[in-house]
Amino acid sequence: MLNVGAIRETVNMIKEENLDIRTVTMGISLYDCQSDDTKRLADKIYDKITRSAGRLTEVTRTLEKRYGIPIINSRVSVTPISYMAGGLHSTDDCVLIAKTLDRAADALGINFIGGYSAMVQKGEINSAKLLIDSIPEALAGTGKVCSSVNVASTKAGINMDAVRRMGEVIKETSYLTRESASIGCAKLVVFANVPEDNPFMAGAFHGTGEAEHVINVGVSGPGVVAAAIRRAGECDLTAVAETIKKTAFKITRVGQLIATEAAEMLGVPFGIVDLSLAPTPAVGDSVAHILEEIGLERCGAHGTTAALAMLNDAVKKGGVMASSHVGGLSGAFIPVSEDAGMIDAAACGALTIEKLEAMTAVCSVGLDMIAIPGDTPAEVISGIIADEMAIGVVNSKTTAVRLIPAYGKTVGDELSFGGLLGTAPVMEVNTYSPSVFVKRGGRIPAPIQSLKN
Image 1 (cartoon, rainbow, N blue to C red):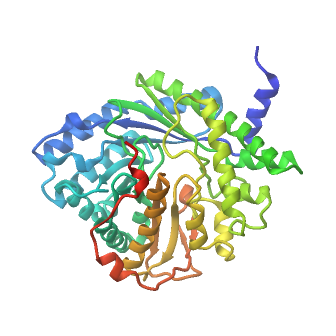
Image 2: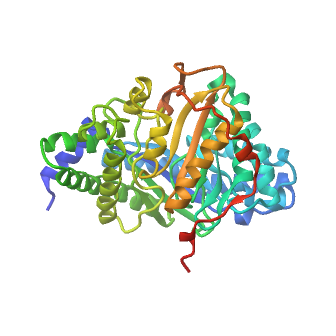
Image 3: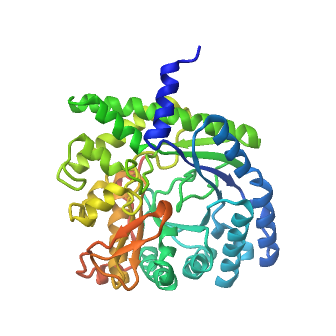
């Protein structure tokens, strides 16, 4: 028998508290597209993507109408392009494939396509080096392509040569997309311990252990969690954690429903639900505001890391009870430009990059969508990446860096992307140079806890 109270509660979550399905992402294997001829490779990739995901947006619109649940994005992730070694002979070849991905995304009517990616945590194959060198031009010449590079893992350590190069790549990408708020950098993320089933951009790609096709879903709901804590009123932190856990269960059940239905309608396997609380710039849809509901005057105040750790843990405990297949990043996102509360906290000085770095030790991603002065040296960017990779490697968790050197802007200015990418206040960076450290190169060895065999 239908529970009328539960139905009303879900309707209220959607209408009043910004509950939505943030993304339905189809993963597509491109291994059968291999060709020594780059043009032939591009044609096969385009055909495979458009054939496989041709009904994706139609299905998500149908489900949106059927259940009344907003589905914000339909997306595609593909096999990391650096693995398509046979057809990649130059950076021009890589850029051609990037433009092919972009053309396929346009044909499908999706907003992003991920997988312009390379895995270099222990070293670079030739095609990975070519792809990394091509990233600035590829992101400047496309609108929907997202790129990611995994430079570290707990098992391999940190590839400092790749870290140094990614600092340079981020700077080059900022310059080449300077006429559009350096937006290329918003589509580029550097990872440690990257998950291979992540439905969220910019880091999504279709991993080597995945099925031929798969549906992965990313849920949202920071506004729902904040409202639940508000309704709980004066209670101790154990009760707050229990409230978050129960709310995360309800949110995840919605994601499980959409994921299962979408997979069945498309005739492909259901992969995972990503439990991450993904914020937006909209008022009332902020992870920072959850932390403030818990009891902080401002996100960034002392106690923020502890509150975020509790939030992240409770979200995971509630989510895993709601779905048997949980994966991706799963936790609480803290992107500065995409979260109204984070934007306010950064603008007033309560939130600094150093505090954000501490928060990443307990959240599900890392330093995300942070605008920094455009004249920040590449070596400083590499140093920031290295620090964040170390947190991921030592703690055996995923961490990431998505920095935007705001070309022509300095501390106190704003960088506006519009839409879900939001507005980023340019934050101050410690510019004491790590140049000698970064340029030593080599590999920081894996920590002792990597020896688990």
